[in-house]
Length: 85
Image (tube, rainbow, N blue to C red; front, side, top):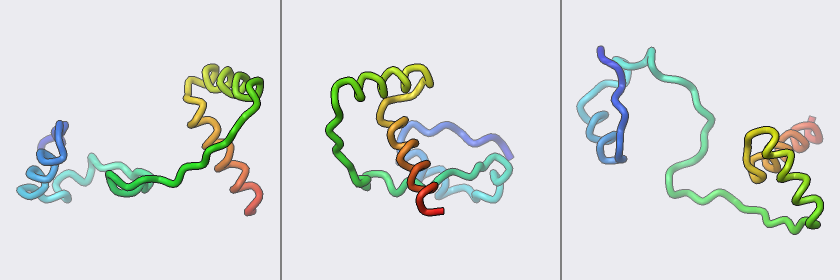
């Protein structure tokens, strides 16, 4: 079977899978983390930071090539996993 096409819209994706069997493309599939359905809002936490803390966190995120939000989220997830162990 051919390679999976790149879809520009959700409608294109739906139309493709209406006419194709995913088992024909199983070798091209990869496991991904469950993020929820499109349009579902994730819970949000607002944290007020001291300007110096925000600047330092932003610098660290830049050094790591990520966003401030992503770095903070990663650190929270790591710390929660540590505390729950």
